[in-house]
Image 1 (spheres, rainbow, N blue to C red):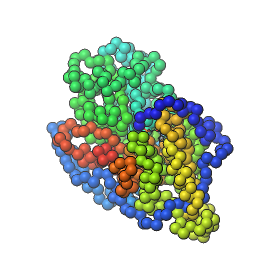
Image 2 (cartoon, helix red, strand yellow):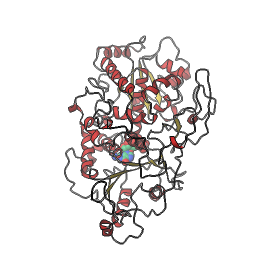
Image 3 (cartoon, rainbow, N blue to C red):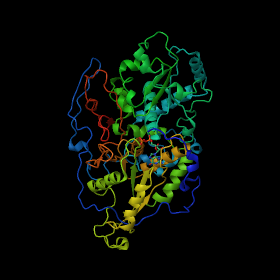
Image 4 (cartoon, helix red, strand yellow):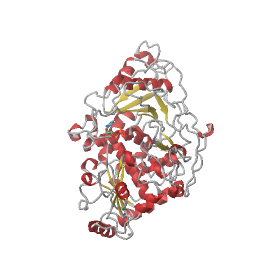
Length: 573
Ligand code: GDP
């Protein structure tokens, strides 16, 4: 979302994220023994919201979409309505113990260059999804292309010369898509992941315009090369050059009717921010765009979902991603490895506060400045959600006599396989500290029905979004990863920050729904998502070949509407 102004994140580095871990000097994060909300009600079972739409079909001269099959019980996850058990498909063997994530990561990467790449496997939950052999092969071929055409290669230097000349060269061996960031980190990661998928589908080389606030966040993903634009790249003023009015924007070229001209400009700007996704996803658009050797792409949405509605990519996508629920999961785990600095934050916090827990619950609480849900209303969503889904959060004892009762109760839940009491850690992430304070207070003053220990932790509370500040973004990235290590993840509707966390984890989140207005009551308070995929919040208003008014969420078997943004689209198995 839109950046705040002013203050630098660098000075705000909290006590817990100093590069080398030391025991905390003050108890900002309190380990709380106790029990939670009065949740006497049984869990309400939700079918999962989402599509709910009747199957529909349409045809066009080039495209034949099959009706979306109605989901049957057996295709739904076993526990669509319960929190206790994991709703994901049966985990695949031990593949995720493999440090290279089932071949997703190249073995050619130097271990010293990026510690998280090799250490992540021992912190993450095992992935339920194995990358297809075809995806693994395509990634290795992509890496070879990137080495051949990437910065400082002779082919790159030639291509840059053409760019300087101002004219698009006849099709060259190397074509590029230069991603430029827009909006908050979650938006950025969704659009960067989508751009990488686009590069794979169109044989382009992905390069990244990296302003200072993005530097030092991620490791280089491609062995033997870089995805960062070199300092002497001829385009420097990205913010000023690439606006909605830019004459090189494909949308504006199309409006002006000059995209079929013999002499194309040296690059095309593909503007896919929120409401501008209309121009790009027709096959005719893609044929024109393919002529440009240089493309600059700016987006803040998960536009990857749109490729699954295009016949041209259908076969390739089916081979790359037999499991549609794992598209972002694989792309993000391949592309994004936290830098050593961010990894220090992640591991320092994890080892200190989360490692000893038997059960970890992530609570991502986002209050959007443009939709300021008051504290009590938002807090009420958490309480009602935990009533709806029994076991989502540890239950507070109804008849709470004393903290010690819970601690010594004979009915205490033991951590599996040990004689010890179960410890549940609740990780709260939010720009505000109020939710953490309240939840911590509840567990501090109450006992849990099961007698388990509950700890409540919040890594940071920066109060405002400061996307322009590197250290702030490092904390945000660290928290996305910490959330992704949790067994259950509760996210806030519409937040791309949350999408990234559950997508990385391949965990289907419980989504706290947005009320009709900030003060109104959301009913239900939350739903369990039927997929771990992020939502494309702003799909095009219509699709080429589809009849006017067609429901895009009903056009293809693996595309459905989102629980939190009805017009939005998401992929599911
Ligand atoms: P969205 O606005 O919720 O869709 O997510 P974005 O990630 O695109 O933008 C929100 C930005 O606000 C984040 O990138 C962070 O900079 C900041 N932010 C929001 N919530 C949190 C949080 O829980 N923890 C931290 N550290 N930063 C947050």
